[in-house]
Length: 461
Image (cartoon, rainbow, N blue to C red; front, side, top):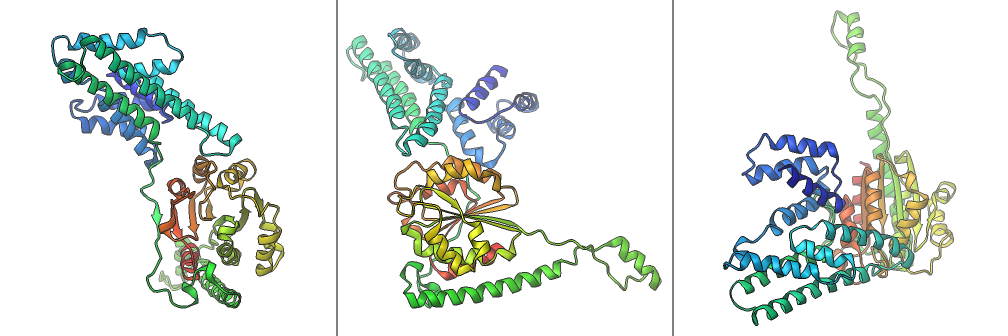
């Protein structure tokens, strides 16, 4: 049993599911306390010890199913006739004895024999190579050649098995030969699934807010992109009133909280003046902790009109938070916090949309933006930070670098994505929202003032 667990741990580590030595020791000791013939108990022990967060759950499930189910020998297929076991070993030996051009062929043969470790290591090396090469090529197709090589090798192995079986019996369509061929084909199909099905972190807690309505009446329900110049001016006045109203609500709420929590000792001590009756209630003076906001806003042409109003609304609320850091991007990213601190809000928005240190004519590239943010600004994120990303997620088929968004999530308290596109258009064309939402706590469409106002109220109240 110990060897079985150690082999499974090796697979987990090869597939980048981190398992420490102490967790292995705890797992082995816990197995002594359960009925090992009950798979539900056995799986629960492994899950409890090896899965640290809910986001790793799907990764663990894939490895558990692979090792304890998909790679277990099919005794019925191998022992279909008396020559079954001998034929099974003969096929594997034939594949091993062939002249190998690279270690990938050994990995495929080991996988067929029930040992997926080498293939998992190859896949992990491929993903690491993709991350490095994609930064140089700036393309989400950078790992295609490596994946294609593995796919071709799997198909070559399938063909060699068929050729061997045909030369052995003249037909691979009857008896044990056919069952063995089907058995090896199932394993090769599993290998292809591991190659093509990318394991993403589980994000069942993702909050998806759909605020679309069938009837769109009034200025608040008009899309930002469809506003006329007069409506833009009217919208600005409405935003000023909303911001003033929300600030007043926040001030009143904080004023009531400034009194802090009940100070029991001082209240009882003061009650001594009134024969032990607590007539005066004393509170501890604890100012409320205000949150920190970091916004990263796409100001490319596709979301330009929506970005103006979102920036206006978000940064009119700077007094509601201890710190607001603001960034804008198209392909490059620029810190525009100082512009908002030194200028009136509407003037600041105009400067940001026209004078930031970025190339406004470049193609939108979310991946390059995340790479540059990680390199230059990652230290602005901490566990008190709410990260708000404003954009449509359309990256012109450049590498999305979604794993960097995962690193940003790990450093934040909360990641919220506001998308100015209707939800029905997400994941179409060059949209990468299907990838990015796996690393967000909340995604929501934000196309008009009513939707933006609802989000701001939820954010600050």
